[in-house]
Length: 391
Image 1 (tube, one colour):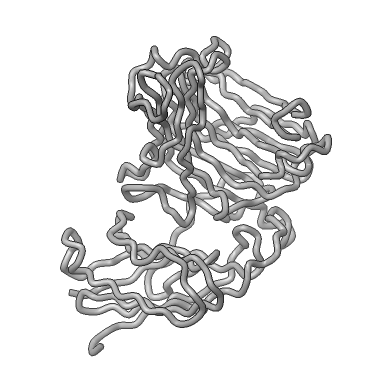
Image 2 (spheres, one colour):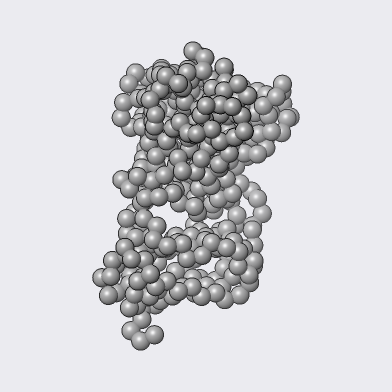
């Protein structure tokens, strides 16, 4: 097409996400590079994965899975559901996880149910060892709780140790108390379960934003609130298994949850209420050896060929080649991170592929020269970059 400028999005070597040798990140070299957030002081931390929650609508599907089911079923009262609609971006750089009262969703006789939000990096990112950090504003009402935690499916394996996988609760927060919970759980959730925890009291913890962090190495776990260490432990045997990240809220009307020792009665709260997240960031000690701190799963197949974008006169043409059958997601976003159009979200076969985006089809898209973001995933390989469509 005459006058069309072609920009190539090339694979650049990067630290392994999901610990697969040969996993690469795309970037466009014709535009300014992404500026990494400031790193925490202390160890020489290298940012390996993050989300600043820019934009509007649903969280980035290339980073987060959003479960939806009856998380807290109660035979004697309203249930607590995880619904996708209760995790969303507010357009001001925040993830909102909302709790609300909803109509009864199942066949029981409850007058109503509750719902809240949850996101997790399951199947998209996991890491063993490093620094895991969240900046957030806690809820202020009783009846429900918010949490930032790590999980691996091997937590269910019973072998008398947490080394083969531990649920790591970096924090759990209740709306009615200034206590913050740190906890470890291993060997499943039955009679063999091992548990350890600490509940420091921090005055004013529900006022404004705070930073909660875990530093995890092969010897111990170290927990922090606003840079102050609150717990250090190796109880249960330190996990040596890569885990995925979870940011969740939960609500329950079961007796254990409504007791004075946990969340208390949710019927006494005013809804909707919200848990607000500014960012989630994951780091790794850059002085560690190459494989340390990541899952040691085998590679997931060869990376696809570079993806190219040719853009002009209101049209962008994307071309790429798949070397194996895989699920593909590609979305176009405006410069503020708002999703404009999902170009593709389906399984593609081996071979060359071509996708055309006509900017004029999106009526609220500016018609003048504009910068757009491309985000997605070719199989297990993340895609991110920017391109310009001239007037």
